[in-house]
Image (tube, rainbow, N blue to C red):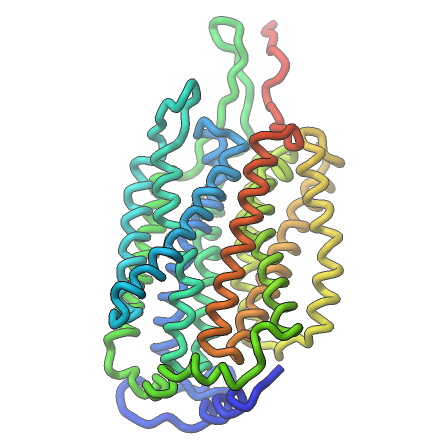
Length: 441
């Protein structure tokens, strides 16, 4: 899909760049500054770092925090509540119309970094609400960490319009790395093995969870460092004069929304179809799937849950890299892949609903099927979302904002629905490792 402006921008991207400073490289067939590519990746790394990093810690967190397997559903709601950042941003834009977008981006990245730092030390703290312990500190700081990602969809993407189109994909790679790098750290961390049951002095049975190679605090401190790198990268992008030659003319960036009025309406059938697709994809990616993953994977063992979470998160940047080296997929081919993806998606939902006794529970085949299903679904959803973002560039800033809005609407609806189903219905049942008493000889 193309437009007149898209063709013009592509032709401009192929022109040699002028100016001194960093060496200009011809990367992926288009002249560009490699240093700016690296910084774009570093900046994108900080968008969903807090949320993705906490998700890959869930195999450890569900064993250590009082919510147990229901923790992911509560966490997803905390993340979606962070969509209030969209309203705050809209209010601030109205109160301070002359404020630069970069000021809000600096503020968000600082908040995200501090939230991860504080969570490293406060996550175990619980508060008695009613008669139940709740992980109030963890969920509150998760909310602040999620402000970055939730608001980035309507703030960070429009900021990219100030730079040439060729840097969108490297930014998306960085956004994908916000799940990949925490997954690498989590794989190195491990989960310590499967829990065991021991007999207490009062003849009660207790579950003992083996310790990982390093704890949750160390993991969150590593995420804090990565978030600080994102803040540094954006500072360099925004303030380093050597990248001025990579910016589009200010008049072009400022008139981008006005220019969209001359293009296809966002209410056309094609745009509506793409926006609905984006809403559905994010309802599953950010709401349904994270909420049911513990029920789908934990009956197959802690290691299966750990692998499904970490390898699934790695599929995100892999899908973005496919978008770099491969030609954009035709819409019909994307529709065919999404149709085929219904198979593993249905299997995932079925295992969650059949918990605590899903099919092939105590077999290597069962573990393999559940892990592979999660990786496939994660990869297809990630690639499809990237496809929509790249396609939406033809709509300029208005098109990108529209995609950002439906992204958050879909995510919110999916998470709220699953929070209700997990906590207030009997559809999902937690598997108890130590159900029967242990008798000593």
